Every structure is written in structure tokens, then in C-alpha cells.
Length: 398
Image (cartoon, rainbow, N blue to C red; front, side):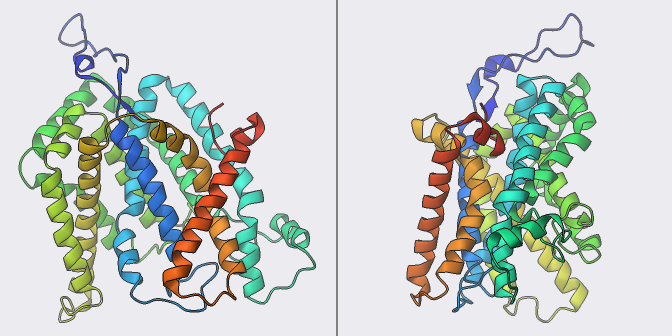
């Protein structure tokens, strides 16, 4: 779960004005952000299920595809991944307040690298097997295919891949390279800088300038570095997600910053709604059709960046206002969310492959696939949580 310091923790004792503030014990949990993390991963399951039904490249496709479903999918893919990186950045702040840098990095390596390695060798190969079989590949058995994971090289030419687990190496890399910045932001000078940023963001409208760095990245790096999710040649995604990760750290480091977002949640909701309407008017509507290619691309990237920022701020504000309380359901969900994330896409792909011959309408097949994915992920969670070894392999705490 994600904790936050209580009001009594905001003042630090110092021997003089130049002394570094003392980091106080954490006394309260930020349950709203805990819930938002769970919701973000639930959206991920729905989104990956939707990929089965839309005409975008994916591992396996329903025989009948839906054009109208691309609209909610387009809306989601403007902000769903930035939201996950934002929440992950916030989680780093709270983690560092509970442990030193050494323990923090040791925990990150264990809980990110171990599930990644296990996933690449065990969880992901069934997805690639389905892809290869549908592309005309022939194997005497699944075991015969699985052996090629070690011999054929990396995906897409070979069969070794992290597929949907790409999020894990990105987060680990961000944690490593940002450690000096984290140290600065936790220092007295860093706290002064963050407090100044909060005062700046109090000025109406200025908080939306958070979108500017990501807009610059999309404009200059996007065309040169198309999305690959392979970490080493994915500079547009890497830089954009890293910036969002840092924003999550900054926002969650300051109770005043989260208070500001909660107070203005209705404003951010209105802004997100307006940006959504512009998004649908611009794609594939006539709104931008009369513009030359470059101004049209800039307008599209601007709408996307502002929608992402407004949605994240609105969701953080509403989760703080409405969900900031503990419950048995939240404790279960925060324990289950990581194993669900690791297992879910493989279950979706396998069910989709087995159901290729099921001629049900999308209105029936979509909820059935979501339900099947959730059920399969729950069964996986119930199995892996019972032994120490499987808990480690799925990144769970022991």
C-alpha cells in the first residue's frame, strides 16, 4: 500500500535554520492512491481484452473485429500507462521513507528482476507460441517450441520476449538512474524546491504546463524512435514515461501538492472531458483535417498530452476525496494486483486462441473473456500465494 505522512509529520525538528529536516515516521496511509493503483491495473486487464477485438496488431484476434471499440481504446491509451508510471513514482517516495537506499534497491531488484526472468521463461512463452502457430509455425509439441526460447534469439525474430512485462525493466531502470535526484528531493534544498513548485502550481492553469516536457518528447523523439518497448531503442517512450514517473514522485512527496490536486479535482475532470471531446473530434473527425501535416500532428500531440495530465490529476484528486480509507477488500487487492498483472495477458491470449471457433457476438464474448481472465488470474494468485518460492517468483512479499 502507499502511505503518506500525517499533518504532524510535516514539520521537522532542526538545530538551526540550515539543518536538514528530519524525516518523520509515517503515521497514515494514502489509501486513495492504493485504490487508484488497483483500478489502473484493472483497466489494464480490460484494455488487453479489448485488443482481441480491435483491428490493431496483437497476439491473437477475434474473427470479427470492431471499429467502434477503437474509440474507448483510443481514449484509454492516452493516459492508462502514464497513470501507472505516475503511481509507481509516488510509490518510490513512500518506499524510501520506510527504508534506506540499499534496502530499497535490494527490494526493487528482487521484486522486479525475479518475476521478469520467471515471466520471460514461463509466463510469456505461451503467448508467443500462439502467435507462431497462428502465423503458420509447426511444432511437434509445446515443449519443442519452448526449447526455442533459449536458442532462437530475442523477439520478434526469436522467441525470447518480455511482452506485457516490459513495464518491470523500465521501472527498475528508472529507480536506478533517478536515485541521485531522489536523494536531492529528499534533502532540505529539495523540499524547498518542491514547496516552491507547489506554490507555482497554485496559480490557475499553470499546473497544465506539466504536459510541456512530454509534448516536446512526442514532437522531437516520437517520429525518430517509434514504440518498441525493448528498453534500448525506445527513447520516446522511455523519456516520456520517465518524466511521468518523476512527476509521481514529486507530487506524492508533498502533502500540499496532493491537497491541491484534491481541491481542484472538478476542474481537472472538466478539462479531461473537454480534451476527450477534442480527441474524438480530431480522430478521425474533421477538426484537424484542414491543417497541414505538421500543425495537425502538433495539435494531436497537444490534445493527447493535456488529456493525459488532466485525467491523471482528476483520478488522483477523486481517489483522494472518495477512496481514502482502508478496507479488507483493499488489503486483498493490493496483495493480488501484482500476480494478476503477471498472469493476466497469457490467460487472455490462451482463452482467445481457444475461443477462435466460438461464433458469439462481441457483446457476449468480450465480458466472457474479461471474466475468464479475472477467474484465471485469481486461481493463479490463490496458487502462488501459498508457498514462499512461488511468492518470490511472482514478486509478492514474504
